[in-house]
Image (cartoon, rainbow, N blue to C red; front, side, top):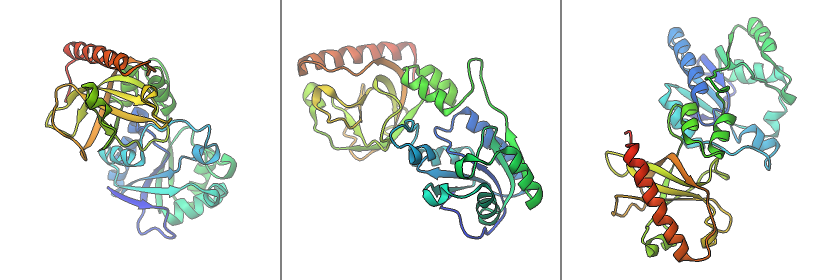
Length: 312
């Protein structure tokens, strides 16, 4: 998959395009991307995604923006897995936010991306103050020579499948619901970095992963599976939070204790799959009390894995 920064002044080829943030690439996104790729293959054109960095809501309301489900790197990997040929990552700034609906269509879609066919979600809005809607896009398409289709909402028996629904499930600790919305267990990937080695002194060495998310979408202690160290995923327990007992300083950290792994893994790039929430993060009065709780967490995780074998 080709990844390009920004939108060129002049497209080098035509494209079949979709536009969105695609945070988490959930089942609704996957259905839209499947449609995109199918249309692109029919027309013999690259399946192209236009996405934004930062998320527009992070630009307009940085303190109130929702937690990200995935880093940009993770999102690109998920888009590639869906068969996307090309991604344009556009910087969302004051200049871009100020484009009128007409300027966005003419400069970005037609001239910059060479759109031949556009597929969007049914709630898509565009242009300054979100003044452009689907009817305006259809009219622009007829005038400028590109097709426009809207993807209807994808829902299951409970609710509309959306990034907000995934965040709600993760915040509630409902990992089965999050996995149903995503089509896979929720995961975070990162490189193992050196820590303070406190876990080792407690008898529970941990792999500390670099967190690209400014604010994670979930918190607490979880039964997890970890890939990146062996052919099969390894069972573990993970704490994601601020480590109140150890004075974490308020910055979220992801720590993973592998239940049946004793080798060093510094520098490895791991993916942690969150399978079952064990408890919320808690502050303990002593390291001894923390150690006792981790022992109970590990026993609960082993019992859970005994009834829910890891799927590789």
